[in-house]
Image (cartoon, rainbow over all chains, first blue to last red; front, side, top):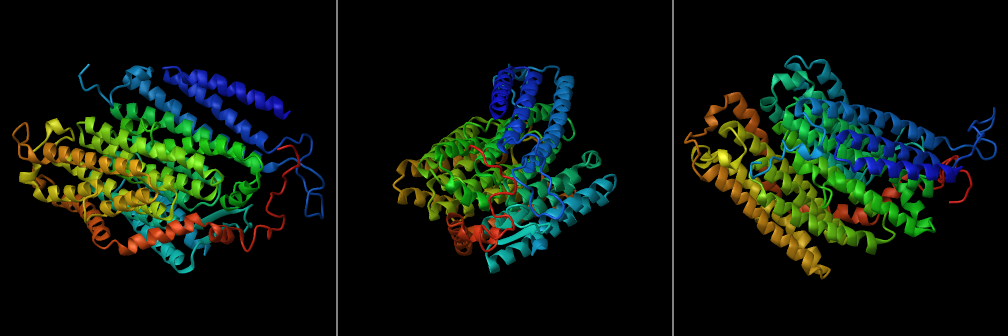
Length: 120
Length: 516
């Protein structure tokens, strides 16, 4: 199970990197979203996977009985997903606004803040 | 005790909510100023406690470390929070004259206070995942501030700033995941103990490099700095100033924290990388600045160059060098924020920050010239200003280790910094105005005169005080460096009397057995 997810993370990062190499900012953002989800999976798998053993503590006990699933990475991933969602919503809106007012999605053509000194 | 630690977070958040509710009237800006004053007071009290009692740690919600959320302040954290309060107040006052009603209605003051909260949180947290969260708080506020107003130039700079910072965020998150997978903890004090027990130190070094890249983007080191000069000159002056003062320094702080507390297993390898990064950062930054022709863009490149000095202090990894890095951090935040504020007044009075379009300020506004020269010379390292001592300590630390090359780079970059500063002086102050107009400070209203120049003068005065009376500041930096190099007290204070006092032991509640 760990191996499967590790491979999946690898594929997602490869695909994401490929997309991020594009000049088109929208593709770049899509690549970023893929890698971001790969990072989330990485945290998830870092807590080790223990299927079908919920971290529940029986009545009257202080500890869960036996080996149970690690709940902490899931809490971390949840936080990371929420933060990532907010950031990407912002980034997509920004790119859309940028497209509206700059008229391009190509990063090469975005030279407004850093105009060429030779006036081209 | 927890209140002391929580106050620098609660105050700006509360101020932010109030400022947002009152954003349509003049009350909002005064809430921002009041909040910043309160933050400065709170940070002063925290500093007093840290000076008196050593490391101050608190567990939010009373869950014992390493399970609970730890806030912790050692000397470095405390001084960073104080300097945040100070810069925050200076910029909040400056914003009274700089930020128009349109930006206020869009929520400038609320975002500004969230930014301060995020920065303070990053300095005070004792938990790696929380550091990530505080970075995001800071980041989302900075995104908002950067593009507030939505001019085309801002959108252009904003896209680059946002995308590269998101990359760094993901790398940081990935590093956290891998580190947790190896150690089973994310509390930084606990990590200090846990990483020493790891058998596979090689993998740990790989994670260390991931963190170097992630924090390196935030700190704008070579070769990851391109977002900074692409965006820092585009927003309002008050925003540029607070960004220039604080944001990259949070990255530097995170690097110092992680590479003195957690990643100390293979110092030869990691800190040699940092040494090269430091030298290249210094050189490329200052050369970039030499090619620029706009005051704010020159200053942006100088942020990059100066970051190199701080990283140099960390890379040398001796008590003196780290003391130099701490001293440099404090000095740089004051000076750099101040220079951006001066650039703002220059633009207001002379109409532009492009050196080709302005001039003649020396004749008509000599006081502004003085206010520029103090931080400019301090940045370049003229005695007796604060920058001289900062550079002196770092150069001496390099020579003590026999690193003549690093010392030479630091000195030559200082010289080139003077070149850039004289370029601004010649372009903006000395040469006559190209259109023949005579820019005067009197063109500001008396109100603007007061709120724009007071913070600049106060910060300039502070630079002089540190420069003329460096002894207590150097001693403080040395104590702070000693604390960083010997994290025993830090770890003991965070984890209680020992790592195994928690009800479940320190290794984690539900860390199932399995192959590492």
